[in-house]
Every structure is written in structure tokens, then in C-alpha cells.
Amino acid sequence: MQTTMADCDGDGDGGLELSDLPDDMLAYILDQLKDTHAAARTSVLSRRWRNLWARIPRLFFWNRQPHDSSHVSDALAAHAASAITQLNVMSLYSATPDATASWLRVAAPLVSGELCFVNRSVVPMSTLIQELSEEVVEERGVFELPCFPKATVIRLGLGFLGLSLPPSGVFSAQPALRKLHLEHVRLHGECTLDDATMPFLEELLIYRVRGLANLTIKLKSLIWMYLLEIVELVHLNAVVPGLKNLSVRLWLYRKNLSSVCIVAEKLEDFSWGTWYHPGFMEFGKMPYLRMVTPPSVFPYGAWKVELNQNCQRFLKLFSRIHSLILIVAITPTPGLGDDWPLMEGITRLPDITVLYLHLATQGHTYGASVLHILAMCTGIAKLALQIDVDFEGGTPCSLNCICHQPPSQGAQNFVVRFLEEVEINNFNGKKHELDFVKVLFKAAPKLRRMRVTYHHSFTGWETLPEIFQRWASQETSAQVICLW
Image (spheres, rainbow, N blue to C red):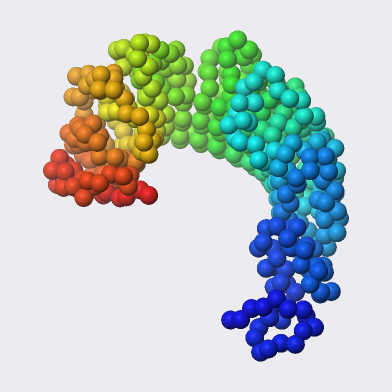
């Protein structure tokens, strides 16, 4: 098909021209540019093109002037579509509160779908992470989020620009707000999210936030909630009766912690990645809970005992759980407490059916650590290993590293009598990995399925099926897949 850009009044040459297309199709083509400024520039082509860009339902702006967002406000005011289904604004540098508030006021009644605003978008993520932990950060001012009565999704990445949430009732109209994401935000003291403000909210993410001391969440419709890396938090009170998925990774320390109370009786998936102490924290009953992710465990390291005891305290909440995800950080530090016993502080695990191990190895061997864990949960039916390894040139540990020490006799002679399925991802075929798999076959007499995903840097993958079948029983099926 021949496609040309021609004035609507021009004579055709027999080919199909863009101007032969209906207006709706032309607006669709402009929409695919994902650049409202570029789409608006087509207005110079002819009278017919002049207002086509204003019919696009999705708008994308890049603002390079921290103190001036008038081009965004003007474009929004000129927009002729009945509704904006998606509004994306990227402020490359640090936008001022006034410049931000000015275009938000214009956008508020127009957005009927998703609003996404990212401030300081050119700032590296490493810089934002550093600013999160600094004692003194630059004060960038505060703006109040106006009422978006028709928005269903709001995502704000503010580069630690200050935010004040609107008063109650502003998100209660239909279609009401369903998703709220706040990232790299500076709040001030207290924040309350409740049914009077957001009665239909289903998904909440608060990620890398400063200045928030007291957080109260009382939302009946909430299903998914992630509270991650909120510094300076002292009080957390969440009553979320419909919640099914909860992940909490806060900067909670004994020195400033006052209270945490979470009531979520329908919770199914619970991840807790911070300090836990029964005297300060209260969790309501969770009869539908199926999957738990506790704080990380450490086989080695100077602080392993204290950190592992923290994990153990949390795990005591659960006598039985269907699936357990353990993040195992294998980080030996020679001369700083890397001695036996292995994984000191972890004395027991709940009665579980499925065990997921995320192994942060940093180039160290993991067999002894995994076998030590398996010896504490011999009733599992499925084991999944996710090996997080730097294959692209990570520095290998020394030959005398403690991670090379063989597991204890108890960790070599146990039997996982109900284990039927094993998955290993990021397998690299090193000797210590093969040794581990050999022990695993021996320890699991009822193993029926072994699925190994190997890294593409492993050149000897063709021999794996033969090796596995030599160790496995005749009833075991071994599958080997390449990971690119």
C-alpha cells in the first residue's frame, strides 16, 4: 500500500493517501505517537488537520521548564475529546509546586481514566534512593492534589516533591478511583486514607516516602496493598477487611517504633520484610492465608543471629502455611562472625506444602544453606529455587570461603519423603550445583518432576538430562530449558 502525507485538497495519483482516511483513523494514528506536542504540530498541514490532535484520548507531555507548565495547561484546555482516558506528564527537572498545581487543576475534570505524573524524571534512581536515606534533603515545596472525580487510576512519582492529599469525599463519585500509587513522595506527619475519601479503592502502593509518621488506612474495598520503604514511620493502623495481598517493607527500628496494627481477615498473601516484635505489633486473624514471605534469612554474616531471630519471631505466628517464600541472603564477610552454626537463629519452620527459596548468592555456593533449610521442612511437596546470580562477570568467592564448607551430617542424611516436584531457575551447571542436585535426588525418593532452567552462559547443558536421569528414579521426569 502506498501511503503519502498530502493536503486534503491535493489531487491524488491513484494511491491511498493519509487524507483519504476518515478522521477517526487519523486521530488513532496520531494517538500512537505517544507525543502530544508532535501530534499537535500536524495542525499546520491543513484546516482538516488543525484540530485532529485534540480528539486523541491519550495525552503525553514532556515538560522541560520547572517553573512553567503553561503549554500543558493550554493543551489540556484546547482538548476537544469528551474524555481523556490517559494523561502522562513527565517533568524532566524539579517542577515547582505552583507549576504542578496549575496544570493539575485544568486536568482534574477532564481525566476519566489514568493520570500519571513523574517529576524529576531525568534524575537517576540511585540518586533518589540516596535522598531517601539522607537526614537532610532539599525542601521542594508542597502542592495539594485536586479533586479528580472521574479518574480511576492515579500514579504519582514526585521526586520528593511535597504532596497534600485532598479532603474526604473527592474520590467517591462513579467511576471512582480504583488504583493509587505514590512513589518518591514527601508527606507531612499524618496521612489517612479511608472510605470517606476513596470508598472504591482496590489497589494502593506507597513506595519510598519521607516525612510520614502516622499512617491510617481504613478501606473496605482494598484488595492489594504494598507499603514499601517508608522512612520515619512510627504508627501504622490498617483495617482492610477485603484485602487479599499485602506486602510491607518499612524502615522500622526498635528505637522509634510505637505501634503497628493490621486487621485483614481475608488476606491470602502476606509479605513482611521489616523488623518484627510482638510487643509492638498486632495482626488480626487471617484464616484464608496461603502464602507468607518473612524477613530475609542469613546463613552467614556478623549480624546473622539478630536478623535470623527477627525472622524466627515472625514465623512463630504461623504453625501451618501452604506456601512459604524465603529470601536467603548468602553474604559471608570473612573475619566478621562467619562461623558455625549455619543460619544461627532459625530453629524451626512452619508446617508447609510448597517452599520457594530466593537465593541471593553474590557468587557464593548455596548447597549447604538450602540443605540446612530442607532438613527443617521435610514434609514439603514442592520446592522451587530462584537463584539470583551475576552471570556477567561477578567476582567468585575464594576457595577458603565458608560457603564451601560441607553441610552438617543431619543436612546430608535427611529424607524429604513427600517431595514430588522441584523447579530450579538460573542453574549454571557448576560443580557445587550438580552436587546439590545429586543430594536432592537421593533425599527425595518420591520425586516425579524436575524442571531446570539454565542460564545461556552454561555450555554443557546437553549433558544435564543424562546426568539427572542417572541420579533419578525411573519414575522421575527431568526437563531442561534455556533461559535467555
